[in-house]
Length: 389
Image (cartoon, rainbow, N blue to C red; front, side):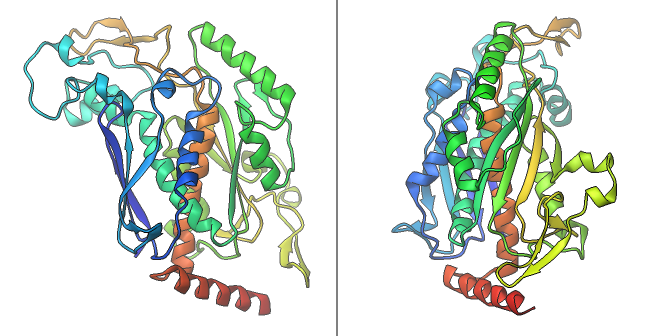
């Protein structure tokens, strides 16, 4: 069975819920590590007041016993602490009352799902759209990805992320070992390695916030320790780079993806793009460079996966853009919901986890079994096979 998950819940509802199906038995889970990943999503310079309210932790309510998965679906719950302020507005029971009491939203915000969702689902209270389309849902996706990350870690696979750009400020390139990258970015409020860049970015975010605006940026995810051959060239929907690209663009506010040198490949010659193949007894087949970001033919080639995603500025602005009231159809300034000036550092953490999830899916498709022991046996046999090739 393929690894899959579903999430449910609203940004001001009682909780977010996720169900993971397809995990093997006997995967030992580190609950502190799981909650640490959720905490990372809440950090970052430029976050709004919601992050001071919520202290996200994942409560596992099914599929795990005595610290290990059983092979049954794993159910996770992330409580919303802010629910106590919204119990009447978001109650599932029918209520009588004014639009003000229901906090009905009838002024769609540009750049959000509000108007499209209202039209599609025939909803005259746009709160029914924004509650689910909110980036709060990514807390559940990080929880799910954190489980996948632990599965990968059991086989020596590491996942790291960093911010490449916030607005007009770009971080200098680095070629740090993954462990060092993880350590340094975790110490930075904007998830960059370079301290001078960090200072410039934090001051820039403060300026943007003071002006009532928002700013986006570019984030990068690196996955190290993967074997050759995850994904496949034989069908479009089995190409792992394509699946990762779809997953990244599915993150709230993400509008583009590149792998390896990405769009730069459209500007330079083939001799400057493709990675020459080498062979040594120590490393076996490998590449002289990694311009293609760890993929050829939709499959991993044994080098690091390098993926970048671009996040647009958050569309909720404290100097609102013009919109149209759906009741009167008259122009109006867009309704403001609580928001962040910049969520790029947090988005870097979310991207790590959606990439980890897709890699774990492909890993189980390749080496799948019903238990960790069976997967380990399949994995070791495959490494031995390609070592003899």
